[in-house]
Image 1 (cartoon, rainbow, N blue to C red):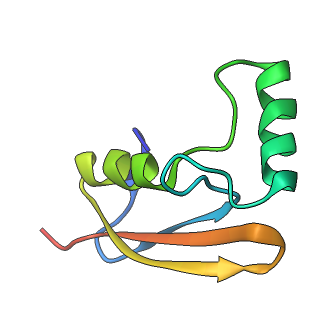
Image 2 (spheres, rainbow, N blue to C red):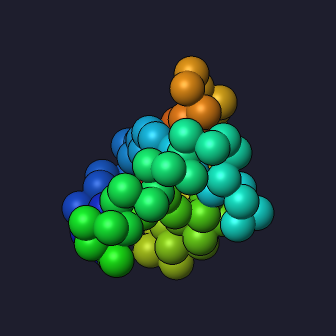
Length: 84
């Protein structure tokens, strides 16, 4: 997110895809297991809260446009840098 707000051209999208927690909760047991596997490799890794991701993007000048439910309990989260 740090770099995206700086290098992304206005009007261009940033699309994130993957599992996210919603309201601090995993949406499936498989996502919880995946999160545990990631954190076992590195405590800084893991499935992120979608609300936190949106807040981080907003703080860096990106506007949340849409979240789309995808197969296998994943989401596409779309942001755009507004024209300045």
